[in-house]
Image (tube, rainbow, N blue to C red; front, side):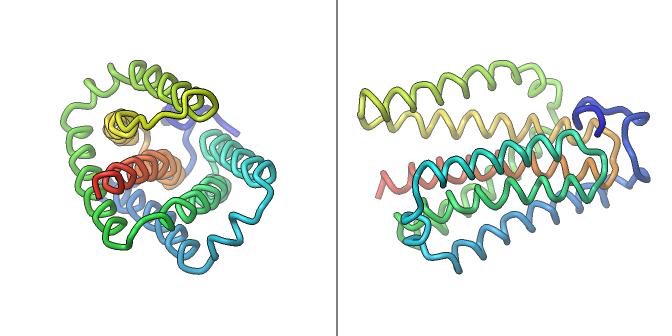
Length: 221
C-alpha cells in the first residue's frame, strides 16, 4: 500500500512513466471496461432477482464492496489490486444502474447516455483548461454533496416530497467533480496504476451524473 493516489509524487508511484496520449487512452479504456460491465449486468441480470434480495443484504453488500473497492484502488500502487478495487466498485454500481434503468423507456435511457457523454467530454476539456479553478472549488463540491445526501435522507424518511431540484444539484456537483478529477488525474505521475485509479474516480462521477440526468429526463417525460 502507498499514499493516496492523488497525493502521490514520482517517489510514491510505481511503474514506468507513460506518454500523455497512452495515459489518457488507458483511462478511457478502463472507463469503457466499467461501463461495458454495467451494460452486461443490465442485459443479463433480471431486475426481479435483485428486487427479491433482502434490502439489508443488498445494501450491505453494495456499501461493503464499494467502500472496500475505493479504499483498495486509492491506496494500492499495484495495477492488479487497483483494477480489482475498480471492479469492486463497478459491480455494485451496476446493480443500482440495473434497478434504476428498468423504470425508464429505452429511448430515455439512450438520451441520458448521450447527454452524459457530451457533458463528460465538455467537463474534461474545462478540467484541462482550468485545473486551478476546479481545485479551488473541491471543498465546496464536497460540502454541497454532503448537504444533498442529508436532504435526500431527510426526504426519504420524513418529508416524502418531490424534490426535483436535488437532481439538478447532483448534476452540477458531479459536473464539477468530473472537471476536478480529470484535472488532478493529469497532475499525478502518468503510470498504469494511476490511470486505473483516475478512471475509477471518474467512473463514479460519470455514473452519478448519468443517474441524475436520467431522473430529470424521466420526470420531463
